[in-house]
Length: 106
Image 1 (spheres, rainbow, N blue to C red):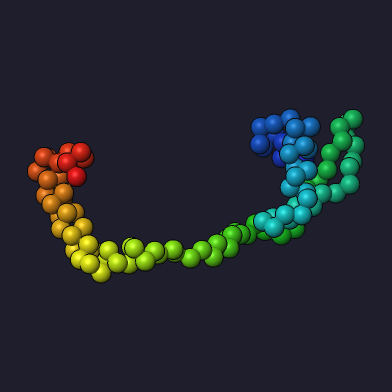
Image 2: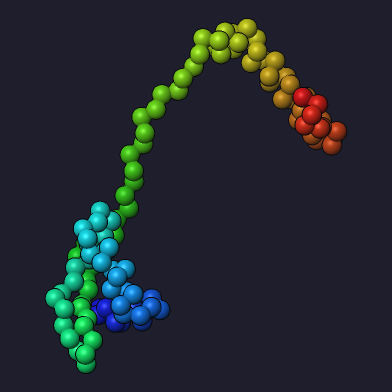
């Protein structure tokens, strides 16, 4: 399509479109758009744009983070704290279901 047709499609003026499309013409990882040389028609400079490579989804690599566990937290799990927290959660669930739970009660 020509730049003027694309600008009309996106609801903008041709000079504004030309400024925006310049960023896409720079080789990106997602899509490859190519443009012909400038041509002048009725006093307006325009190009014909085409997609050379279809858009593809780029998934960023996952950060390689490790979970930090302190010795103190390991000790509290082994000393029955896990069961204590489970019991407290059950009590809160009952209070919430009955409508009597207040967050300051914990």
